[in-house]
Length: 262
Image (tube, rainbow, N blue to C red):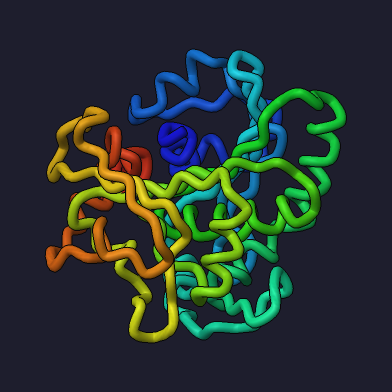
């Protein structure tokens, strides 16, 4: 699923040309390409917070995948920094990160309409919500709402920040089918932070391995709890490079585009 998160960083996959095959010019999503996945809807830089991503169908693996891009633009950072906790309708007392919720709300109707059509066309396909960094946060909120509507959505996130308070974290945790992956000293999962009222969705799959090294199953430690300190959040180190590399260069398309523009 990490390669679907990586594909959201490639502009050709979110440029509103629905029906096209997903490709990664940086070469970091070969499994997505070999599966022949094609977009059902694409969205790019929506609203002030620049929400970007796609929904795709993967007939090889019988998946309907919703993927959100991580932070790349000023608008994305505006959303990231809006850390006010606001009420969520998902459960009593639940509070959600205002910027992340705004990002999801901007594309909610598009996602709901496209998903309704997709699930009617392929009723036996699994629905997956995926993302990295900011995209992981949006994917988390989106998956929670889709489940509340009756969809069986599996959530895969990589380097996700915290998305709300402990009541929201516990609510999403109890929905199950969550795979929150973190890597070594990745700084982003430590944010916005436990001390200001945030907590994490559980369980956490922490990759105990730094640098650009592909992990094995022996390098992954699983821990549980909204205030868990066993994995990334309990480590004192802070690393940006660990945030950019999970099972490969997850932001490679964005970095390649930046190099071409310089």
